[in-house]
Length: 332
Image 1 (tube, rainbow, N blue to C red):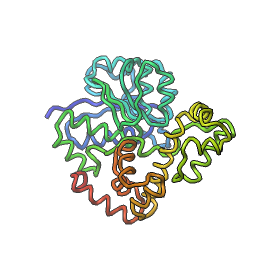
Image 2 (image 1 turned 135 degrees about the vertical axis):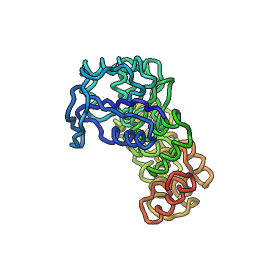
Image 3 (image 1 turned 30 degrees about the vertical axis):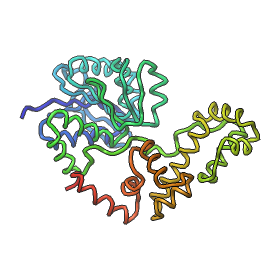
Image 4 (image 1 turned 120 degrees about the vertical axis):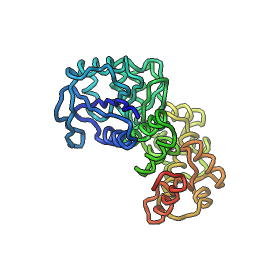
């Protein structure tokens, strides 16, 4: 089996798991030669203080011959994308590479190298707005765990780099090899759902005025209440039409959409925080029926409520739910 050359790009302030996670996936597949490049060869300090050794600097590693270029993310990417030598090397390597990939905020370095125009990409949900604002020519979609657009692959934050690496292995070597790597590393071959499973609470702007704050406060105080536009308008002391307009402008989503997301969050907390039946959670959180809750979870999170509970509950009972993953072939 011929080795495929994977070149990881790192920089001061990189996220270590963006490198070590995918690196381990490729190593476990047994068909890749992995190298690490930085602006200069030698020690590179990660955002958490872990120091990694870059065997190559951009002045001594020929960018040609790279099969797959992987740019990692981390807080240091904002400074790295101003490093002209590093950006130029990324652009040169990408010009001849069969594939180009980024993990998390590494996508900003790809953008700086001019590699994303007209493409659909993803990144960590917390940097979605920044990426879209700074790169209007790029289609940003931050629900998927990873996105493939032609030869450019981008992934969400941190552990999503391993999902991306597994997909690259499957693309190269087939499902059976990727499946075996996933089993060995105790990973999902294809993780269910999207980033919205993990981005609870930080998805909206804060209201700027007291009337809208009153409406938002009423929703959070009792997610299961009716919360139609007339009732929310009464809390705000505005007409329904005026509230609809003000709420959407200040918060970024219409009242009905906000209510639904708060209810989903309340259901998520209930599912992971205890053993209350799904039917009872649905009624208490304003979904009325378990079927309505199930349909909403599938639409927003990509998983059923029971599956969400099994995967994210931090109790002893949740461990039994994780054991069921062996039936999907993702654990030994």
